[in-house]
Length: 295
Image 1 (cartoon, rainbow, N blue to C red):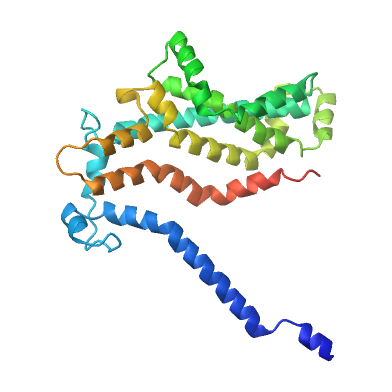
Image 2: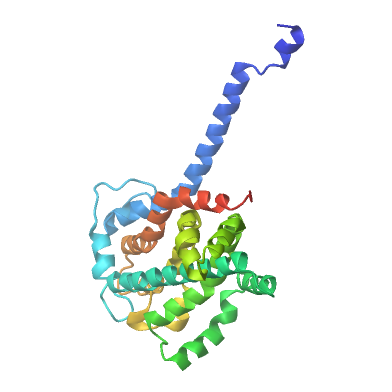
């Protein structure tokens, strides 16, 4: 080996140092990011005496799930001491239909805008895309008026409609960008064979869509479940979603402040979206990149 080649080759020890430095930085950032979650989980498993007398970062002496039981079925939210359980099922009843409706309509709209182009299709897509940038606060008043005229204000059905309409812009964007990568020849061949709009959609387009459907489902479920503004604006009492109920639980103080119950309530509220990203997060990234390159 020549002297030039020997000196240009990376030395093993320098590569090892760089790798160790990279791991050190990543571990530090991971600890910094996960520290609040550790505090929340640890506090939820302690009793009040241990919280008052111990360190915030100390591990619980023993696993105590009484705060979780209290937050789920006994905690007072306003004047009702039912815990988060009924509000959790409100959010489930709101999120699942909202995800299905917005995803299906987004798929149909994206399919129509890419494979059945019509005059003004680009303008329609531009207007739909503009809807992605409309803040929640702008649509509260017209949404409230619409729900009142329809007669579904202060109901879970009203929240389903609100989230389905607001999420349609995002799901259309996802599906439209994905369907652009599907060859138009597939649709033309099916059309020549006599297949119609919905037949092609059901038998050709949908079987090719699982990656972007996963993206849409995860995105919409997260947005709907974590929403606070729409739930607080359009519902009261027993019709509220779990995010609003958790806020009311934390702000309802009768006697001693129960920090362990508050932390348990926060974890119960966040658990569904947390589990979705833990088990399906990689599919979300794959689905986003699947339609990023045409051809």
